[in-house]
Length: 502
Image (cartoon, rainbow, N blue to C red; front, side, top):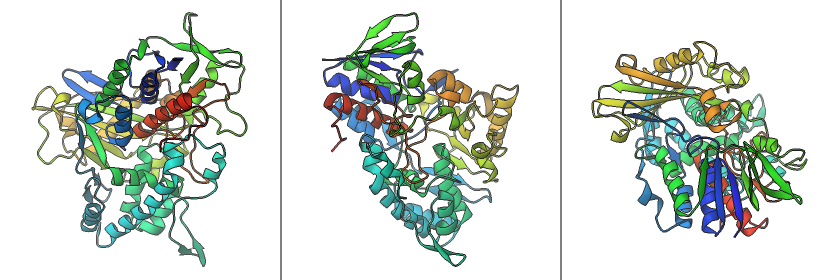
């Protein structure tokens, strides 16, 4: 039995802690804040409750596997997991509206044909078939296996099988999502639908590789799911599973350094000077982890180098406490697309908050989130520049942008302003304070392609030191963070020869 110190109580860290405890190790989690869950947060006031991080879950199999491997209770015994239908309603700039069924390719094709015109659904359906090929080619190396030592091969070829397209007497193939939208989908609304899946993950749809087609594929193939009581309930369930497996949590404990002895990690140093000895240390994001190990390079020239977290975008979340009941026929999620698709992407190109952002509106029909049936809790979310690129602390900046988001959301839910009792506006500054992520940025998932996104390996050059969470392989998102924990646990329990789940 080894002593293992885990830095932070995010979802990836807790997933690793639970698996390591089941393997017989003594695991202690040191969290500088007062609670668990990392970015999976909650805001509560006056009987209202709001998810301030992810609102829905994709790839629930990751957490089903976690609960199967760490105890006899399956996931569905500890949380009420329900499939959202429709998966989302989309409101486009020209006023077109379409509700897309959950995990039904035929249903989506039919809905798009009816809303956008004959042929639109088939083009989207054909795109999903090609996206599945990209998923099949990259699923194992990007989600289920430790980062390959020769990870460079993941960036050598575009895994998306683009359709040949004749342009200016030349035959071209789409290499970006924008080109897929223009050349293969051939409808600006379908292009916006595709772009939104990238934007929601903090990926620039204008320059994202075609391989990012796996993002809409994951949702269409495996569905989108909600946890009754809010996604925060998933974090609670993982935390309680850890506690049942004898994982110890120390809250209010800031780790200020990783102790090294005889060329390997030997514990952590806490604020105030106390040292907790350990044979293994599971750390936070690689960029921040480097600051905890003085005078040592954790990643060599052949590794994926950690990137400054604040170069990626963050999110503004507006929590709305509304008077009046949720009307019949309301859907859980509505995406209100920007009327200025190009301007919406200025957050990536110029580091400015978009004047007319794409806004995701979450209206869960969940009594646990409202004081009574005569009120409603609504969450608005928009992708924005991080606090390093944009001054969210400037007087009036946050409220002005929240006003813009509410105005956009009223295209889908008329009368929001008149129904609002109060609101809570949360910017990347809140994310930075609560999770430690530089600039309050949100990590994107890994994407294999010449212009893709790869994150540093879960292992480091310092023996015994590992990294779990969205800033490590395989990247951001609830499912990916959960898989990072599984990979770290495998590398510690089975050693460097671990090759992932079979």
